[in-house]
Image (cartoon, rainbow, N blue to C red; front, side, top):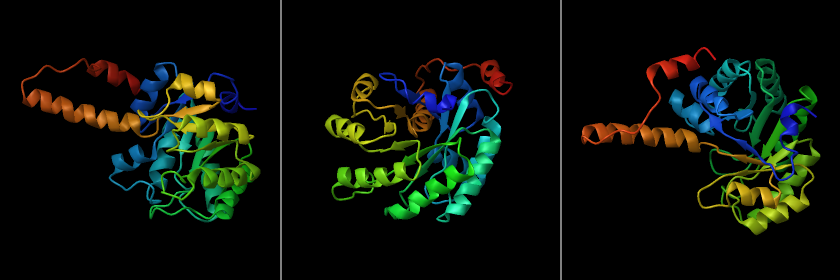
Length: 257
C-alpha cells in the first residue's frame, strides 16, 4: 500500500483533500499540514480561460502536475475524464502524470453535454491506467447525481461496482449528500468512498462516522478565492476596511518552497 493509499484506510479519520489550482495555493495548503493536495479541474481551466469538463486542459493539467509533483506533498490530479475516450490515451496521460510526481488521479464519467460515459468504456480507462501505472491511486468518479439520472443511487452503485472490479482504488460520488444513502453505499463497496463536501451536506465528523474515507473540497477553495477578490475590490471602492491578507513577502516565499 502506498503512503497515499494508506491515507484512505484510517477508520474514523477520512482524508480531507483540499484542491489547489496553482503553485502558490498548493504550497500554502500544504503548509497548513495537509499531507496530500489535489488539483481542481475547474480552477485549472478557469485560470487558463478554458472550459472545464470539455477535454480542453490536458496540457495545463500536465504542466501543473510537473510544477507540483516534486514539491514535497502527495499530489492527486483531477484529470476530468482523462481528456480522451481512448483507454490507451488515458493510460499515456497517467504515465505522464506519474512521471511528474503525481501519486493519484481522479477520473470522472460525466461528459460536457450532461451525459455519462458508458460504464464499460470508463471501466476500460481505469483498467488501462492500472495496467500502465499500478502504483497510481485511481479515484473513479461517477456523476449520476450531477447528471440528473433517474434512480441515481442505484445507478451509482452499478457503475461503482464495475469501476472497483476494473481496479479502481477508490470511488467518488459528488452530489451525494444524504447520510443514509452514503452509509448504504459504504456498506456495499469494497474500496474507499470519496464524498464532496458541501455546505448543505454532512460535516466532516458525520462523514467520518458514516465510514467515508476521503472528503474532497473540489472547486470550493478556488470559488472562495474569487469571491474574496471581488469582495475586497468592492470594499476598497466603498471605503470599507479590508480584512487581513498575506503580505507580499509571505506570498513571495511560497515560490521557493
